[in-house]
Image 1 (spheres, helix red, strand yellow):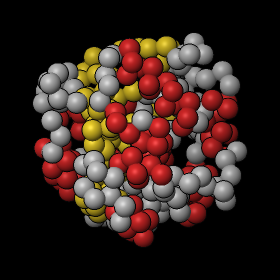
Image 2 (tube, one colour):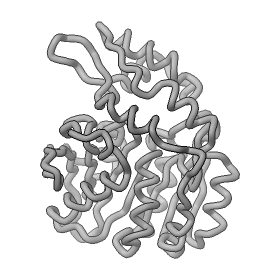
Image 3 (tube, one colour):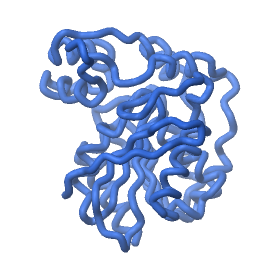
Length: 285
């Protein structure tokens, strides 16, 4: 385990973007952690602290999240732009091969990367996302994303999260919700607690036409022979068991693991997820 350091890089359109780096062995492919729609590098703290030392771990924050600058144009809040941004970071750090771990939107980014540059991916963890998005999950995200709000204490923030996300984490106690609040929110200059992302991200999401989802199946050709872990929350409303089966039918070196009593999305600190990630990493030198 190692402590992280903060780093910054600059996008082609001049945004100052932030990443966390956990040091690790240079003779193994680095681990690249890609977060979800409104999340940030803090989502991977538990995972990164556990596997670093043996692996170098990078947790970039996409534009508009965490310590990364907000975009000037709402239209640039899209996965293709995020991949371009991340590729600049990888180029700057001289990383040409990596293990990709992506949650939700981060998993979609992995699929897109596998379509364009599969040789760079040494292995992948695709966390609770598939080739298509289930309408129920999309509707839930549409209902809650970008609602904002501010809170006087972390307990108030935690209770607000519990109201909207209790189905995803039915076993959480108050301490768990407070920990999640501290991963997803930030203390503002006036002492109020706010969500740690640009609300315009919600506008970009709302503008998407989910009735015409792009064909991501060619990504599976790029991942076909690679070690891949397909994680799914047992109660996920965005990634169905059927969707998982479709992916698994196309990947010869993949393992599917369902995390019990979790919805969208597993935190990657559940025992089932940790053991499965360790199995995947053991296959990759």
